[in-house]
Length: 91
Image (cartoon, helix red, strand yellow):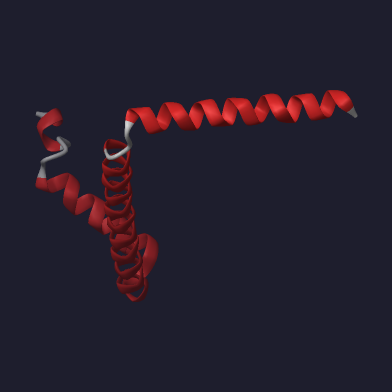
């Protein structure tokens, strides 16, 4: 019986939590608290949406890269690194 009284879905526990919040913050602070929570939720959702957009954009950019062009760029950079190392040795 006690477990049913304090189950998460129980209206009793919800009423107790709301009453505790009301006692802690008072009636005048509740609208400010609710506004702050709403703004935080909105900012969180915008951040998630932006991350999803960035992931989709980067994925589409990678799909358009030609494998041969990628290998050629890797060869060019490796050659540049060898040239830079040779210049450091000569100094």
